[in-house]
Amino acid sequence: MKTLHLSRIAALLLTAVPLSGIAQTAALPQAPAITAAELEVGKKIYFERCAGCHGVLRKGATGKNLEPHWSKKNADGSTQEGGTLKLGTARLDKIIALGTEGGMVNYDDILTKEEIDIMARYIQQPPPVPPEFSLKDMQDSWKLLVPTAERPKSQQNKINLKNVFAVTLRDSGELALIDGDTKQIWQILKTGYAVHISRMSASGRYVYTVGRDGLVTLIDMWFEKPTTVATIRLGSDARSVDVSKFKGFEDKYLIGGGYWPPQYSIMEGDTLKPLKIVSTRGMTVDGEYHPEPRVASIVASQIKPEWVVNVKETGQILLVDYSDIKNLKTNTIESAKFLHDGGFDASKRYFMVAANASNKVAAVDTKTGKLAGLIDTAKIPHPGRGANFMHPKFGPVWATGHLGSPVLSLISTASDKKEHAKYKQYNWKVVQELAMPGAGNLFVKTHPKSTHLWADMPMNPERENAEVNYVFDIKDLSKPPVRIDVAKDSGLPVTKALRRAVHQEYNQAGDEVWISLWGGKTDQSAIVIYDDKTLKLKKVITDPKMVTPTGKFNVWNTQHDVY
Ligand code: DHE
Image: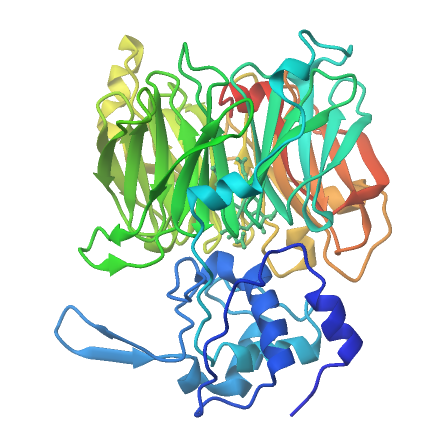
């Protein structure tokens, strides 16, 4: 058996992620041998790299079930059995190193051979169960660094806040705030481990970020320099936050969605003081109990005092009414399992959410509180927030890309406008699939002022695909898309690690597109900016601190759901 060098183990265990409370269950005698130190390494790597797709309890979601042994009843009454023990170390080694056609990415450029071997043996052991996280735990983790009374009463800087971009620096656990007008880095702030998304307060003053370690950071942009004014933990693993946006509730509440424990938490918007936790454990749409239904995307309605909370494993979409937190009213909408990311349609009445491993998109009518449509799509839809535009033939459509299929799907969305009545026949159907050169797309984007639809493919294993974007002409979708080599345009040297061109974001004016180059863990990288009309390179923002940039959130567009 290969052993891992001790200093490497020590380095791996130096972590900001609060894993110490996760007790490892007893080793399985029939599983391959693993030392106590290797178990700790496996636990850390699993949490950081695998839990997002496979679940903490390894019951599977976007990724496959990774329990040592599982059995399930098929519809015809037969029983199917499987598990990591059955696959064995050699096969698991290969899957982890090289990935699979099913969408599992290769880890041979991220993990060492020894680490891959540890992981192949680690996942044949039973999953350790992390501790729960109560309101008291949230309270204890809460740091109000600058009380509201000590904050500025007006904006103390000359920055055009509406055009600021909050940029995730994934592996450095930081957030860069970039002035979209001058394209200068305004400030880089420490945030949680692998900070995931940023959302803006309804007023546009505050930025909220959430990290994979469950840490929420509240940044006030009214100071001369952006300042972290409060932090709190939601648990040990989280992905989503949003604010209360309805009139009268601006900047009042924040909601955070937990992966572990599976629950959502409501906090005061301007202080992060914890107010309430609601568990999402319960029954799937198929009527089976699930112990780990994680909270995926959350979005704030602008037409009601409600959040749309998408519960991944159960396929239940919750409309949570925040007008009375003490007597919380929740409307539960049945859709399809494995809910993940999504965004509003152009009218902002319908929320479109991917049920990714079910190959479906659900459309929620936030006005009536009902499911408007459940649309079959190509494999593994992954929209980000999606892209809305007028299709020359089918009227208003919302677009999603696919992680598992080389197409973009255009779904017709309903509209109250009289002149759109003729498109009703197409509503909640995939009206067109646009061919992409491969699978592995994560994000698509357009803007109401644009005639372009941008699509990335960062999870495609080929360098020539992962490092580029494709741009479709919305006025003539029969034209082949234009290939934009983002990595090449950055002017940065070619590195061993892929420089994945990921996530597009428009500036406030809607005439520039910003794309991140997600490079190696320590490589200097860049944000590459294009003129949306001419598709010509406009500017490269690079800096020694620009390491692993991924998601970017323009204040105005995020605040107003413009995409
Ligand atoms: Fe994300 C959004 C979960 C991996 C970049 N990601 C989301 C959302 C969820 C989610 C639930 C929706 C939040 C919302 O709208 O409220 N992401 C997960 C995972 O579980 C997964 C698959 C694995 C994991 O371990 O986290 C995962 N995500 C990634 C990445 O590896 C990405 C590409 C790079 C990174 O920074 O980690 C990544 N996810 C993003 C981005 C968004 C996002 C940029 C927001 C898109 C937007 O435009 O709103």
